[in-house]
Amino acid sequence: MGNELRYGIIGAGSMGREHIENIKVMGGALVTAISDPHMPSQEAALAIAPGAKLFTDHQALLDSGLVDAIIIASPNDTHTAVLKDALATDLAVFVEKPLATTIEDLKSILAWDEKRSGLTWMGLEYRFMPPVAEAIARAQEGEAGKIHQVSIREHREPFYPKVDNWNRFVDRTGGTLVEKCCHYFNLMDIVVGAQPIRVFASGGQSVNHLDEKYDGKQANMLDNAYVVLEYANGARGMLDLCMFGEGSFDKEILTIVGDEGKIESFLPSQVIRTSRRESIGKLSSWKTGATRSLGSEQKIVHNFDVKYMGHHYGASYIEHTKFRDAILNSTPPEVTLKDGVTSVVTGLAAHKSINEGRVVEIQELWG
Image (cartoon, rainbow, N blue to C red; front, top):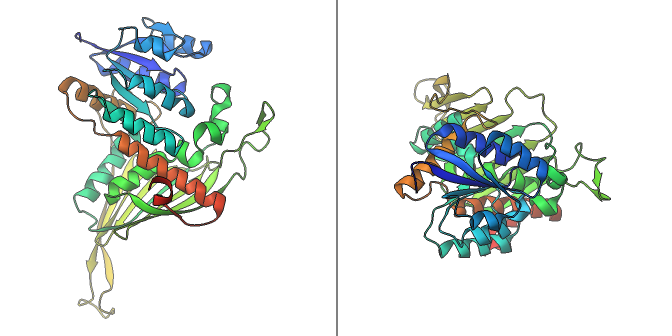
């Protein structure tokens, strides 16, 4: 390995090009190879990484000897095939969310990864968004006490167009609650410090893509849902998703509530708010056990070390620096494939709950 880490990009769509932009400004890194069968994507990627060698097949890139690490940012339903080949190498591997779209593929990927010694990193960058990261850290430090509720609201615009419209179909994406929301289920697990045991969800396709057909096939991605998670320790999580809520001022809100306080983060305003509770049962005429707010704090959280904000408030840049440092220092990944597995299983359970109109136990899917 030379003075610069050599990166190969597998999948040069919008997210693949986002990765290139981060690698370019990070320092100590260079994009040397790009693989994508779609010529317009190749050309767009080459425009921002003009020295890279182009491939149309990921195996040719893996065999080229031109890279030390690879970024897999191809469509969701291709991840398993690419990972089967990538995990058979000694290269450092970074795979975008969601890890896969079926339970069978998730189990296969874990089995392949257990046999390798190279670094494997799961791409789940939302935990690195500066206000989200601070909210998580404060919760883990006990600022809100014992955590009982974690909720995430995302009210946003519809899905963007993708090559061959692959993100319009459940069979290619795993469904909206896998494609879009695995990030959020991962955040809930981090805050609670456990994995959910059951899921109940309600959702539908109410507004978006209703008049869209491709090759005679109707687009079938959900555009709104409520998802409730239950954890073995009694904590609960809730997702409130609306993909026709683009007029929202803060479109992503994380709320963490414990027995001693509350922590919230807001994006894109990058604000964090906290408050604590104080018992006043003995200080007033209120009945014993009543509480009042002990004071609150509000501040803007910004990471000034970020050199490229991109589409994720600098989170992708932060994640790339951590991936790079793990490669150089031979340290374990901060985000593992097991994080990717759990987040996808929760999303699949939520879709099963919607489809069947019932509570779904996680053990039904994973055992």
